[in-house]
Amino acid sequence: MDGTIELFDALKGPKKLDIGPYPPMQSRPFIEEHDKMFRWYDYWIKGIDNGIMDEPAVSVFVEGSRERVTGSQWPPKDIEYTSLYLRPRGKLSTEPEPMGAQYAAPDGFYQAPLTVTDKVEILRWETPVFEESTEMIGTGAAHIFAEIDQPDSNFILRLWDYAPGGKRQLITTGYLKASHRELDERTTEGNPYHPHTRAVPVEPGKIEEYVLRLYPFANTFQPGHKLTVELSNGEPLADEHNALLPPDAFHLPVGRPVTHKIYRDAAHRSRLVLPFTTRRAGEKE
Image 1: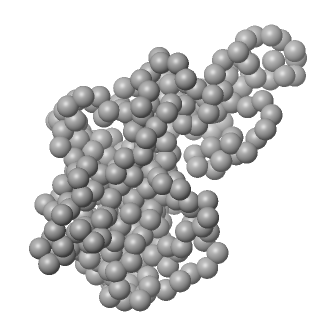
Image 2 (image 1 turned 90 degrees about the horizontal axis):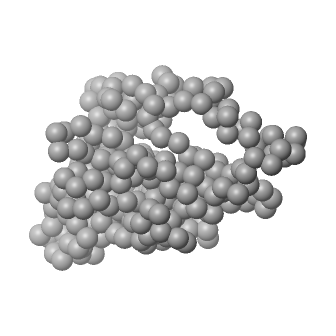
Image 3 (image 1 turned 90 degrees about the vertical axis):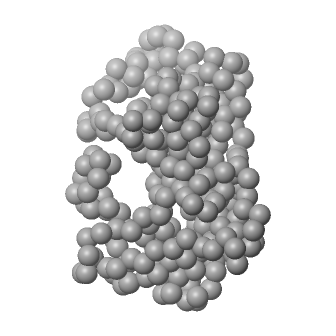
């Protein structure tokens, strides 16, 4: 989706962006979208004035509320990037950790390679339950201060919407190879870019800040739900999300044992930066 939105922003002529629900994922040749495409071609090729160009340029399906939001650009509503800080005991908070690493000791996990185990170690943090509907639309970022004992590792992050009964829905993901942590000049708050032009090995034992780009998403967290973030260096071989993917959709594992320490103290404010909307559905731009 990142590439589709980047192309939409780059196009200068007439254009439309339609982002549908997930799951289920549509299968090629995307017959569910044919009527929309036919209307576009009828207007531009056959000259049929069917009103398609009077409709908003952007239409986005919002998970959670299961509503359509429209606008003239991506994201289709005004947003304000807000930080949720990783805190001790697996909590996410709008307030950063006040204590230093001496008292707010880092979280951590050791990941053995797949030659040794199928188990993927995962760290989790979660918000309190939402008291009112909370909508997020856009890209996001995860700033992770970490120390590893190898020259490289993977950081894989998944954001979930947890319902009161325990059912969960994947919202978005982020991936970063530690040696590709460099950022380029396009990076802004909540919208990081990595050039991926070279690998810079990590100095083992050194605390580094890793900024993961969270893929574009649209979700409303309903009252009683929680936002949960999971961090690992590999992808679980089997869970309800992976069941939706083709068998070759996994990222390559690191292939060596790696110990990770995740710092989230006063000097190392690991956090999520998420796009909270500031305009309710139906309000004018």
